[in-house]
Length: 134
Image (tube, rainbow, N blue to C red; front, side):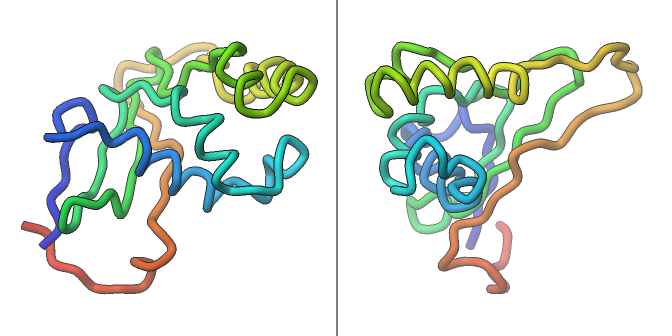
């Protein structure tokens, strides 16, 4: 059975699982910074604002994730020091500059009746499988 939790309320730290799914899904767009999904996962594990994310857990493993925001709160927050630590000075700095605009731009005029679903992903080995939700 799959259980869905808000990421900050899971029984264990889900950042690693979220970042692995993120890397699987976004490495093709982040290839300038690294072609290695493990390096991408390590570099971006810090960015997720856990109270904005929901995770699907199956047997203690993160198998899916999605961020749900109200349009005023950001779902990710980049830390240039962490990016540099994992990607090197040049690529980490470039990631911090280029991705800030892409990932950290709030809605211009958020409506109280509108939300945003962001960073949806499923672990590769669970795509296309029908698992029941508890």
